[in-house]
Length: 290
Image 1 (cartoon, one colour):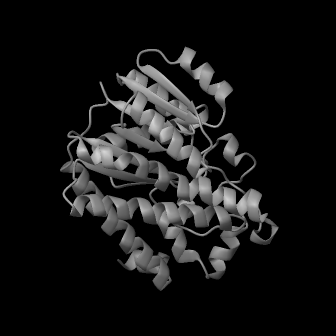
Image 2 (cartoon, helix red, strand yellow; image 1 turned 90 degrees about the vertical axis):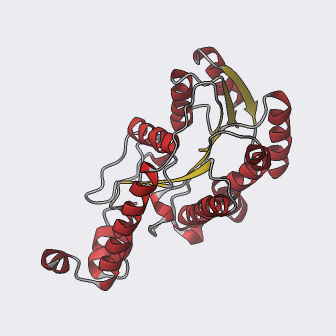
């Protein structure tokens, strides 16, 4: 404690560290008591699935013996390519713009008719706008970011959740949020806002399902920092926080999904960054990010 007090020299940092370890203890305990899901024979739906991490989730689903893999993406050409490259499960592709509620409703209805509700839903689609808030366009930036990052996971989950709740067996809902949903970032105000919304909604849904007896449906909220994908091209990692590899993130998400872990934060130190906000040292560290 003496060492901790000397390092964590602000009340904010000490509170953040205490909150983090409380969460880790709770999360580990919940994971140990959790019934895992076997992906073999299951149906998975992945958004933003034509490339990048979404495609990696699809590949893992195939490797683990999923019966049906449902891929949503706005890029129909890449989706068609994925059909020929993924072997094993039945691959169902739907070209859909998840920024449109009408498109989500229409496509979800088609999925329910064609395949049925997924056993595992991975809300992976997302965009980022990295600039000062006053430089954002109302429609092309603010509206679009909030629709894709915050509202789409809600609408997609809402479309399938009643059917998932009515059927037996282990179910999973995974939302790929961000470390920006836990810690504010310069030139990321819009992105952070969308991910804070995603984090708050996703974890509240987890609690709602547990409190109403639907404990077979586990919700995992994923909060990684910067990942070395095209989405974050040119971004410098935060000091002492290396860029995460897509493969490492996907593998960790896959494990968290299976055991029904409530939170996956990468790296685990991410929440402590909140304790440096408003402190001169935090401002100096902020120069090394963004």
